[in-house]
Image 1 (cartoon, protein in one colour):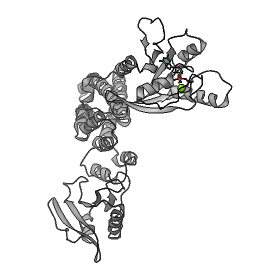
Image 2 (cartoon, rainbow, N blue to C red):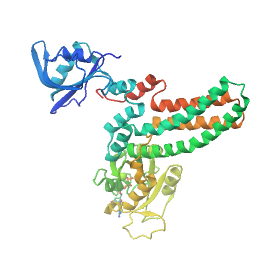
Image 3 (tube, rainbow, N blue to C red):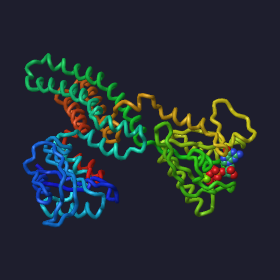
Image 4 (cartoon, protein in one colour):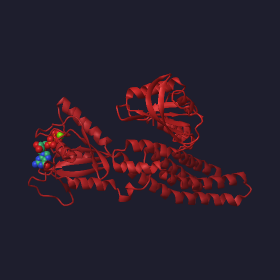
Length: 442
Ligand SMILES: Nc1nc2c(ncn2[C@@H]2O[C@H](COP(=O)(O)OP(=O)(O)OP(=O)(O)O)[C@@H](O)[C@H]2O)c(=O)[nH]1
Ligand SMILES: [Mg+2]
């Protein structure tokens, strides 16, 4: 049982309505102290119209939605007070509720309670945040799959298989007199690892694609001065955001803009042209460009199709050779000879679709990547990789003929990482980290 919390669930702006949420063991009692009707004995989901009053003073006429726990979002008694959309009214009601025995909720505390009361698992709790923060329709739909629990279903078979082998080993350790079982167990470990690792690889690959759909990628436009990076940014954005001139060294700071490419957000970063310079401001810009290359998920190296490659181009090609990159020739409108297999564009004429296609192909997304549930945040993916490493360690130990109780240590690690994905392991500690990223009232 938790104490009673209160928060505004809607944005603190003037709007038609506001919703104030009250949740906890005393929620009905707290609301009854300032509502025109006594709701303490309500046992069913109920909607009531009435007044919020401070003694005899009416603060607002409201609709109150009453959810008797455990059949509520948080799993405990929950009341939603729907009042008029004035921030002043909402604050007055919240202050009144605070004075009647509740406290302000912290970030994400409602979702955290839903999780702690076993209404949702951790994957679903994280999906609530993802749905709210989604910037594309595709990202939202993918997150909704996780919210519905479809993503959690991907993990349960994995959990079961590891639990199967672990319990078999426990039997073996408890009854060491059956020596033949020990030998069988080691080969069982190897075959289970061989069965599960390809499944985990698939989950990781699908999860990474899901992550791209959900969060987009950072794409840096780099090249020497005057190749047309800012013109390319403007062409991709469809607006004149960055300054374009024929003076080399025009861009100094990073200029950013987002586009939606087939349902994926590209965070574009236009950079200062990279060259050796004495100018203090420009050289700071050049250093920023070099930093941006390291941070980007994908680098577009822009070359001038109308000129021979020079030392500056070579240097940039060298600088980016370890980074995922696409090399593109700009200014194809000028009389040039196109080389086989290269990408040519003309930013000035908004003729940039060959580059868009190349970027999209590089993402490696298939149609189904947008529709299938996946473990698509960095926490889940990191843990999934831990599961795989622990399983491979168990296999290695089994192959090296280590005693079965040592082999089982790594299997336990794998199992614990699976539990952690679902939030079933050491749950209060992990959830603290996750829920701190939520806003109040969720
Ligand atoms: N003909 C032609 N000119 C272009 C094209 N793209 C850009 N330019 C011209 O090239 C010059 C430099 O363009 P910018 O976009 O400022 O080049 P930049 O790479 O951002 O240059 P810095 O910011 O100095 O690094 C301008 O005069 C543009 O009009 C193109 O596709 N064709
Ligand atoms: Mg520029």
